[in-house]
Length: 296
Image 1 (cartoon, rainbow, N blue to C red):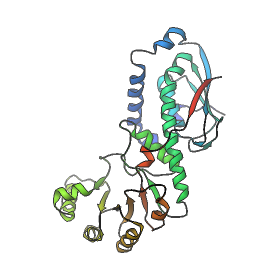
Image 2 (image 1 turned 90 degrees about the vertical axis):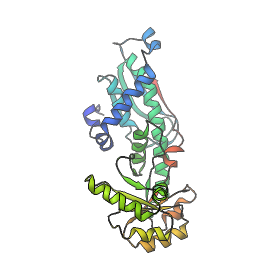
Image 3 (image 1 turned 45 degrees about the horizontal axis):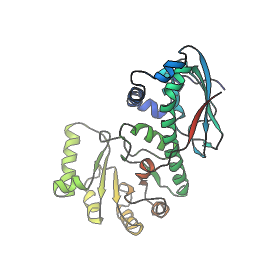
Image 4 (image 1 turned 90 degrees about the horizontal axis):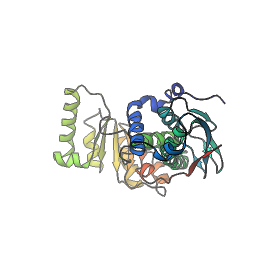
């Protein structure tokens, strides 16, 4: 198998779209771990002597973070070579070799922990996302993540959701307007909030999407006067309530179920005909997948 280079990795859609924040994350994460130097490796390993290692799966799941691992290795030393055996999004079994790497001893070990921390976390998220996506594959419902992410690790976590078969709701507060209960309550009612939002978008010449959280049928009807809304977030509704809401909306807006959705309730919610279901659990409750890096 041919070696992958940094140019190949830049074509990964998620990385290409979010290159700057991901590169900043890598820089700060390495600074956090290495500080003024990896004194253990500095004391006994060579900067020039090359060695090889293999990244091994220790449990079953969906692998994620392979592309990010390559980017991290190349960030530390562009001469490090990564030979991929298994691609992002593929199933893994205990004992599978995900990749082999070759490069200066010191740089391999200085990078090892960041690579494993990222890949173990990302693989756990991708595995959970894949499992839940498969449970609702017979419906049109798409799984979405939320902003319930680990501070400063949001981009890898959302990347992992993509790898596992889900979609990103929004990256942060900057790339979508999402009117929630507090916004509505602070403004007195939903119509006041939407009028202000519409004026803000026009004044600032913004074309970002707007999602509105609605708590009942009356708030849904208020939204009909604002057809520029892209999606209604149906908050904490039972399957019976969701069906009524979807019938009332009648295709005017796309729909999203949110609030208290878990693995036990997901299928029934998806079968109501809702377009999306958002689960904070995808990123805050996934169990890491155990991986290790061993010398060849």
